[in-house]
Image (cartoon, rainbow, N blue to C red; front, side, top):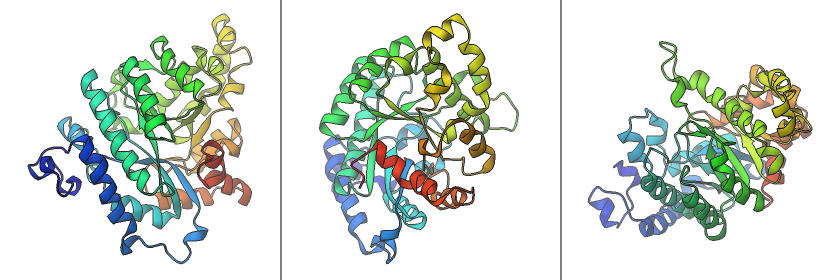
Length: 355
């Protein structure tokens, strides 16, 4: 176990193991309190002017790190994640609040019991951090999909007990996308709660090692986002459950460039049934973040599809620099009002508790 994740006074940690859930909650709160309240992270004189809200900001709780190491996911930035480092990155970029979520591959590693355990422990640990400083952090809680019954229980626990800001879902789980019929009970409950659902892409099992020397992150994450959106569109999920506020990572991946093809598909009998108003109407209701997209090649096609009011700032920390993402967005020619919306106001509309 990485020493930086050991909770002082926890017998499990002192023995080299993982802390219990009770130790997570108590220890995370104490650790967060020391880090967040210490002099190293005192507010800078101009902190009041720094108002960004980061919707796409990862955390790596202690229960999650061994899973990544064991499966050799090669996500060193997550393995080395600490509260101190994330606060420093926020301060450098002028981020006031980060809504935390785990990254891909999520909590599903092929075992339902393990998925339930990892989801609960990571949600508890993240919630303890948020509880200590709610103005600094928020939480998108994870679900142990494909265990649907357990996911429904985790939704209730996340919102009613942990007071999470929303839910984090992967774009696919074992080859099943978000519009799959098996997901319908989850979507019904999220719709009932008018939930904000942040989606993060995964490297799909279908499409690994296709191009020698090119990692799956280069192409497959953006593509899996497009598959998830297409699944939601043509399953009719978006029209049946209009109260869910979806956020898609990386400016929607390849969705903007595929819109013409989606329009053609929507002219089929099945497409017309699922999308009586067509796909454009539904795509323009979705939200899209700026992670890995603070450049004209990603942002220009997105702006042909949606208004700036549907774009929210996301950094993808610790994989990308929040400061560089913020600077990149400032170089794209947005008006001051549009940029203020992207950096803060659009997220506040989704999450009114963020003042």
